Length: 422
Ligand SMILES: Cc1cc2nc3c(=O)[nH]c(=O)nc-3n(C[C@H](O)[C@H](O)[C@H](O)COP(=O)(O)OP(=O)(O)OC[C@H]3O[C@@H](n4cnc5c(N)ncnc54)[C@H](O)[C@@H]3O)c2cc1C
Image: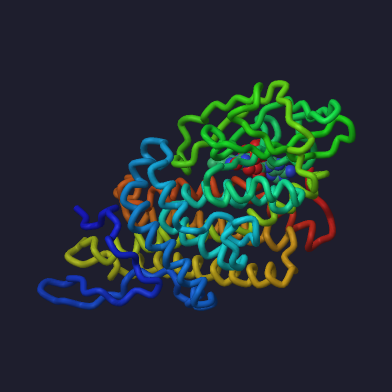
């Protein structure tokens, strides 16, 4: 039997928690350190104002999301009931300036995504798709007029977005040639093709669709109002084993007519798509670190409470070895992404920097969540104990936004000077 529970505490865990008394040996009270995945105090690098935002997000995630998310995860369902409270959090368009966006530094964007993933990687993926990929495409590649029109309602979560790049037959090779086509007829574009894996697509309002212009063979981006555009249909992808809260769609575009006014005016080739992906890979590195933090904290709490051989399993050397390796992975990732944020703020973040962070943090997360699952023994494969959810969710983080291999090919090209893409 175990004493752990998925129920969230009513009050948010402080960013630097105080020791809590836990009964260990018979009749002996000992104050044990509360699980804390900020070993090198990276949260201290934020300003007081930004730290307050992160604390607000933590309080929301622990009070509102944690108590209900496992049920949604098991049911393959999205928690629409939480959206009104998400709107109140004031994090729509975080890291983006103007247009009704929440603003703040790129570090704040990272910390918020890490904090959300610490409780639920699906929820951070929903935010990553809506804010990072969909709003980000308009923010980075849209005209002034397009930003004015689309970003304010999206920042208020009145219109939710998705990002359609991957296709059934084109995944890692997206830069080498999309099969979805765009053909211009006067002031209208005709889109045909299929998109697969598109997060939020089964229920969202606005789809950023990337398609190959048949005239010049270049990739272009289109803002498609999917609920009202004839020829646009979405089928939900069923039976996923990871990020089950996120609703992924298989989109079919059949002679979809999109006005020239909805073509992203700054998205004229895959290089412009890659600018968006650089930002979202930056964010996925933070999300993966948050995922590892959530798994570690759950595992540590379990280790302090689970008794075997008459002692808490956390008192065994081999269990401590697992925990030490987990916190080392997390700390290394946190230090890397904090520096990544500095590079970004200095305007020096390259595609290779973001690729390295995405590859390293997702790989370390994968190792960490596996150790957390292992530490929980049999309970590690039951969704009620959190570790299992982090364990499977990490698999998707590792593969989406470009697989581990694709990130390493980007890094490999930067350090050797040789492109080794197929
Ligand atoms: C949960 C989830 C959410 C997603 N959300 C979105 C979304 O919102 N929008 C979107 O557009 N896409 C989305 N994706 C798609 C995701 O980005 C792709 O799955 C990913 O890019 C990999 O493409 P693929 O699945 O087609 O794998 P493939 O490209 O078929 O790759 C299969 C394997 O081959 C390897 N490989 C391929 N090429 C090479 C090479 N040249 N050298 C070495 N190894 C190689 C890969 O690394 C991988 O291990 C999502 C995916 C998932 C799982």
